[in-house]
Image (cartoon, rainbow, N blue to C red):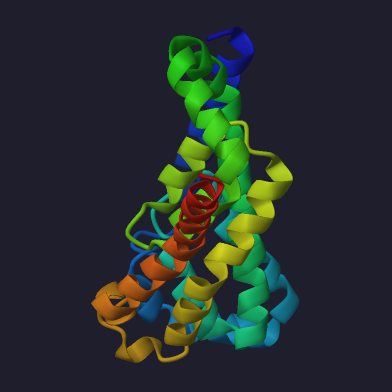
Length: 227
């Protein structure tokens, strides 16, 4: 790893530590946002634009630095802002943060991984060139697959930044709206499990796998027809 990458990594670690230190203890927990909900609502009422900008910047930082708490912030967005405004803020902030995290992973790790696992990455890159949007869409729609891990893995591939952005934004939108809507009734939420029931997790998984399954069935059909 060259000096520039070491400096970049140190800057990331510094930003991570600074963000953690600046956040009040427990502020990215369910109980924490419930405790401060009324005070935050008052701040939003008195300074709506500044509050929205601060929320947006915080969400980008948490997403880009892979700090656990994006789901909690989405709930908070639903509690503080109207549904349409929360959707715009969270959708663009989460996508921007995810894209920055992916680019950081690409800058720090892709060259090393591509050189060390040349044959394996050739297969991965070929698959991403063919079905990359479908794979990313499926991963984004599966809530059980960690948000930060998708950013890390996709940074190792050659997926275009523009494609990564729009697929992530579209695929994350359903879960974003679900969490924002749940945030409007924040007092009733006792656990994240109250929001994503097993049935909803299953539905999101099916929705994510549907494009890949359709493409696979179509390729099977066309190959058998040619025979």
